[in-house]
Amino acid sequence: MPRLDQAFYARKTATVAKALLGKVLCHQISPKKIMRGRIVEVEAYLGFEDPACHTFKGRKTERVRSMYLSGGHAYLFIIYGIHYCFNVVTRSEKYPEAVLVRALEPIDPPNSSLNGPGKLSKAFLLTKKQDGLSLFDPKSKLWIEDDGHHVPKSQIVSASRIGVDYAGAAAKWPLRFLVKNSPHVSRKP
DNA sequence: AGTGAGATGGCCT
DNA sequence: GGCCATCTCACTA
Figure 1 (cartoon, rainbow, N blue to C red):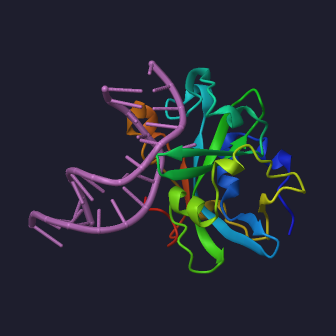
Figure 2 (figure 1 turned 90 degrees about the vertical axis):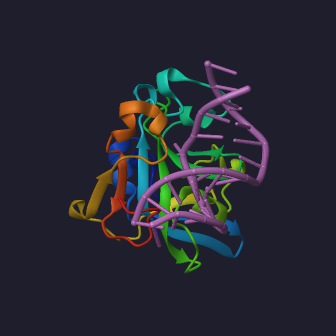
């Protein structure tokens, strides 16, 4: 299966977010074992102009360093002292923006619990170790692939982002995207 | 169905 | 010191 290339990630963040729906996140966790899940829910975070984004107004701390990498790198951070959140960096080094992957439909192993950013990170063994990894380097053990499954535009629902009420009006921006009627999302829109 | 609190620790002002 | 891009469980109803 073809791994998504860097050009895929270099586009506008909301475009990448919607295009990621239906794609398959893969993590090779041992020589014989690859975790796979189909992306069904994402959120876009729009950098400098987005009060909900970690890089709002150009913030550049140690934690967010990976967001200043080029599109197609992983950004992992820890939240509430317990959970990890997995993000895909978009655009270029000049624009620190990213897509949070919020939920996956289990493929392998089946019946795993992947309906939430913390849960999917735990199941896929995604931690700070994966922070900054390339998703397009052919040698990388973490990548996203296109298996031909296509989610038509009519099947994409947008909604407010979750857990960012502190961001004022930006909390209402329709930057959360879900596959319509998917039973695998973190919560119904 | 909806609300509320606790876990638990790095990060930021 | 206070705040979180979360999750689970307990409680009300």
